[in-house]
Amino acid sequence: MRSRFLILFGFASCLQAHDLSGLGYDPHGHPPDLPTSAGTTLSSASGLARIFAPFAPAVSTREDGSYLYINSTGFPDHPMMKGIRNWQQQIPIPQDYSGENSWRLPLQPVPASSPAMIRGRFLRGAIALAANGVPIFNPQNNRGEIALEIGELDEWGGHCGRADDYHYHIAPLHLQEKVGSGQPLAVALDGYPVYGLTEPDGTSPQDLDTCHGHESRELGYHYHASQNYPYVLGGFHGEVAERGEQVDPQPRAQPFRPTGEPLRGAEITDFQKNGTDAYELTYRLRGENWHLFYSIRNGKLMIETRKGNQTIRNETFDRHDNRLHPPR
Ligand SMILES: [Zn+2]
Ligand SMILES: [Zn+2]
Image (cartoon, rainbow, N blue to C red; front, side):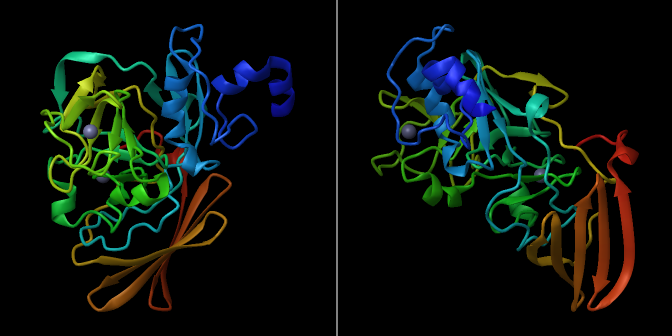
């Protein structure tokens, strides 16, 4: 079907509709600087799509004249959860960020007349999307605490939200190796890229503004991640719409079950995939190893809780039972 599409509509369509997993994407190609119908240039549009290319086919993109749309499950290809000491008993469940529920980034970001700062604001939902399709939330959690400082994050800077949706709360600096040095780690939801700790030439960024970004001749406006606050960006240099304490629009995570409660004293020691849609999360609590074996089959989430080798309980959740719960 896709190959027929490409044959019928030809090379230009191939450049505009980036299915990174398919025939249309050439990771080494540098498209010519031709204007599209929307007045942008193919090279600038494809530049944004290329940020996500190292993670194809798990992450795929398409674009129209105005936006780049990114499909992902929010699951990274690195381990998760290990190292969390302050845990709300949420577990990673793949999300369906695709189609109508995909991520959306403006291809032509517009500088805001005055930047919207994120401290104490945008405490729900993502502020940026990492190159691997994992959302990045405000460094503050939804109660306003710095998630990293209170042991809520795993060794990769992430954890799961109320819908069991995995997300980062700091910039994923560990992705730098995979995306390549000097390449962006993420894109803020205003459309401006987030680079790592240095410029592409290895020098330290100079003259960062309150949003933790700056303009350069080579890269245009861009943010820089940092190892201290603000970690990702201090505010949106570009225009964003705000609704319900979050950048709007953005995809919704879908919960299977009611929100978890904090489990004092637990530390997550391991997480692994045991098969297709089957996972095992291990935590230590008061000297005992506990395991959650869970799987998602036919729209149901099944969780077996074991203390050592002993089954403590079995639970099944139907996604539809929880449609009234807020997603985050
Ligand atoms: Zn969170
Ligand atoms: Zn810079």
